[in-house]
Image 1 (cartoon, rainbow, N blue to C red):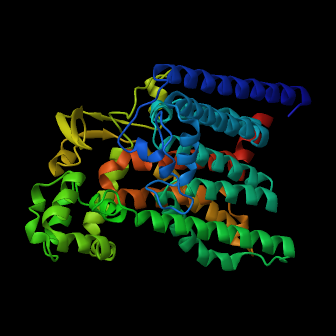
Image 2 (image 1 turned 90 degrees about the horizontal axis):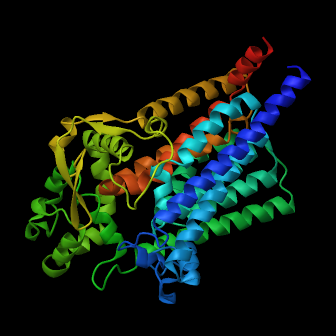
Image 3 (image 1 turned 180 degrees about the horizontal axis):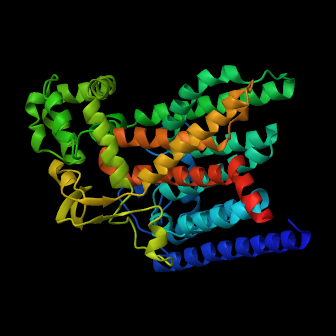
Length: 479
């Protein structure tokens, strides 16, 4: 490429970078203006949100219903408007930081296309609206984007410091919610067999010290998550037991698991077939079925794991429905707007078509909307669904096979060190999706929004960095 042409293209990339950052700021300011006090929900109080400072909600050891980082921020601020403003400001900062680093590291041609997709995702109503919600999803999304940014830097700056920043941001993200930490644990279990491929490196005192510190941090997060599960949701039922109820309370496949549950001790008193509300089930267990309650608290998790393995049709269908339903939300937790055409948002999020009006249970209220009713098994067969996430999953699988084949063709000594670091995020997104859809099928959109963003961003960035694609664009530009 001639120097003058190269200079002009690089100048254009800077203009585009600044344009997209300004666009994100513009969209987030307008969204904040819609609801500066944020939307408050039943769980918001547990996160310390609101205009009062309740320090009893804060615990460094996990003796609270929510992990301490978000609680600490909200309790210090003690004002709904300030809490909402900080969520928007932090989100705008990390999305802008991702765009900035993409322009810094990616080749110009790849930056043009990938930055457009990232900017559209950043201002989509499915993402922006969470910053108006006083729960944990806004900070979860923001720190995840920060983690992806550090992963992108690590993929270009292959040194220990860049890797450390990525690991620390990943641990920070996992500290926000127990389900994030669970996804990290599963990722490590799957990743460990590949460690043997790593090239041997000399561990000096500094490296050994950092590994020890990271191990202690990880153990600390494990203690927090374990203690949190043992807390009392109210005076009679633990948080662990309440979480277990979500696996069978209200979703399209609930009848299958309920029919098996009725065979377990103490459930003859429940009348469980007609019960879909988690709080109502918990009250019934406390008041009338103490044997079933004890079993739910102590035996259910191992039983549920065996149930999933022995019922592959149930498990696969639950995952499939969850992937589709989480990709086409027809309602939001807060008022929202979109400044981008619907066509652009459709690159990531789909819609329901040709469906009859149905009702879906959301907490203790029923809302009317067009789409899949998670409490009606037949509704899954009556709607036409546009779910782009299935295409993104196919792209993720294709990129994985393509990259692994290239590594193996190079006869590399170290499979792990040669793989693109962004594949860690990609693997985490798929695992997180599956885990959350299985442990809480009824809250598919809320629990999977972080993992869908991780999927979209990892696929975009992996594609932008693949050497063969870069060579293709380079040849085209030379011609």
